[in-house]
Length: 374
Image (cartoon, rainbow, N blue to C red; front, top):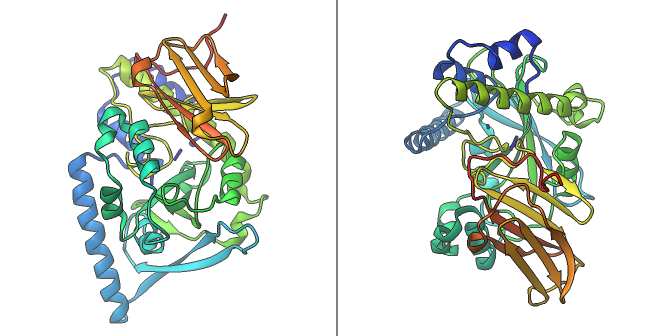
């Protein structure tokens, strides 16, 4: 797992961010991998996909012949608020490494309805810009027809939590299928410090341990969802510390020859959205919230349920965005933190919100706020 905390001692913090010694790429990757981050090239992803398919086939064959297996628990979070949580069990090889659940749950996310063509286009344009215009509903359905699992890190492995991370597992195209919102998963994410995250469809929650190596799936029981569970009580603090540690690492690597920004949005590899909205600065104000990736600012403006796209107008300027409904201004950000490209900005309509995507002029600039100081 990558959607998403690692408290470190002061000594470790100084070593990471203030040392004048060059930081080797291997040290950087070791720090990230210890916290459950998979660092992949496109070639890696092809290779890993093949390895996972082979592992699934081997696990199925081992089960059929009665070979010794290892069992671990995880929990289902139904999208129906009235349905109970369900403790489930998965089985894998005694020495099987890695997070087993994405592949284990893949078939659970097959079907569930067709993806909405308009949502596909809007999401592709928001993520890829003009290149997204070529992404079709048929292509998405072809890639996800057998199910596709996305992960979201609620808390990452760290020394404080015994190197055990807790992750949500969801249908990667649940929103595009129009699945019902999973409010309980959203509240759980909020308890862990992730405000304004929306999930759709039935979901699952599990645990991964990274040390001692190798990384492996371990028990997450129904009792672990209790609000008094140690992992949940410390999650917000750990996520803040993880974000601080990552920024210090990036700064240190920048002083020693640069560092490629890695997707830390709580999802597997770099596949979930192509950005880092969960760990970059974001915020919330009266009537809207905002987050960012490396190259975009996303502004979500609350509007009355039932508002139609025909009644909405969004005006873009390099340092201003205005959202109007029936010519009445509902949001006016006059001094954006930095400039955007008006001709590359887009917006889409949700059930009770307008989602505005603004292309950063300076893609290397992390916005510390939405509005610049006066």
